Image (cartoon, rainbow, N blue to C red; front, side, top):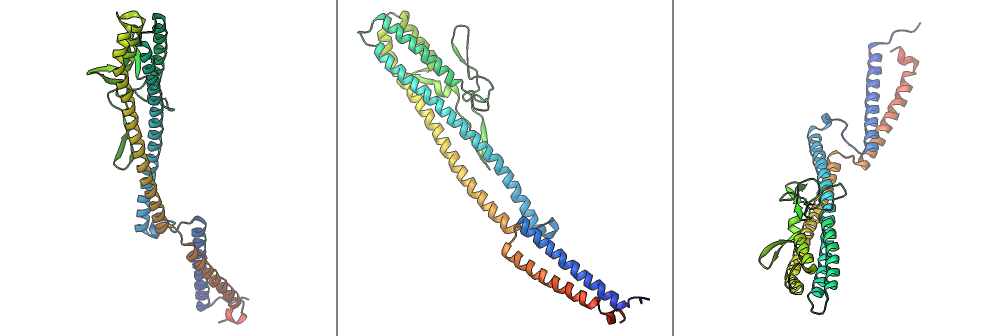
Length: 306
C-alpha cells in the first residue's frame, strides 16, 4: 500500500512544478520574441512602451496615406507637364506657319493650306487641354469633373472647369495643388488684351482664309501674340516643375522620418536578439537541470517516506 505524501513532500512537488512551469513560460515567451522580433506580447507588459508603439503605428498609417497622395500628385503633375509641352510644341509650329503666312510671296492657296494646318493644331491643343489622368480626372479642369473645355454650336471653346485646382496633403501640414487650370495655360496677354489660345487660333485661321482685307498683315500682327502664348506655357511648366521639386523634397523628408520611426519602433518594442537568445539558453539550461533534479529526487523510495 502506497503511503500518502507528507506535507513537506507535497510542498516540494508544488514548488518544483511551479518553478518548472515558470521556466517553461519564460522559454516560450523568449522563443516567441525571437520568432516575431517583438518584445511586447500585450500592453500590460510595458504600458508606456505600448502607448508609444501605438502612436508610432498611427504615424506610419498617416504617412502611408500621405505617400499615396504624393504619388498621385506626382503622376498628375507629370502628365500635366507633358501635355503643356505638347501645347507649346503646337504653338511653336503655329509661329512658324504664321511667319510664312506673313510673307508677301505666299499666295491665297498657300495661306488657306496654312489655315488648315492651324486648325489641326488647334484641335490637338483642344485635346491636350482636355486630357485626363490615369484615374480619369481632368488635368486642367480644376475641381470640376469632366472635360475642361467644351465647344458651343459655333465651335467656340468654353472653359467648363473651376477657377482653382484642388490640393492634396502630402505630409503633416503640407498640401500641394494637383495641377493648373485650363485658363492658366491658354489665357495670355495679346499686346495688352487678355486672349485665349483657342479663340486666337480660330481667329487667325479665319483671317488667313480671307476673313480680313489683308491676311498677310494680320499674320504679322499676330506674331507677338503667338510669342506671348508660348511664354505662358513655359511659365506654367516652370510652376509644375517647382511643385514636382517640392514634392520630391517632402518625400525625402518623409522617408527619413519613416526610417526614424522604424528605428524607434525597434528600440521600444523590438527584440534584442542577442540578449534574447542568451537568456533563452540560460532558461533552457536551468529548466533542463530542474527537470533532471526533480526526476532523480522524486524517484527515491526514501523520499516518498519522509
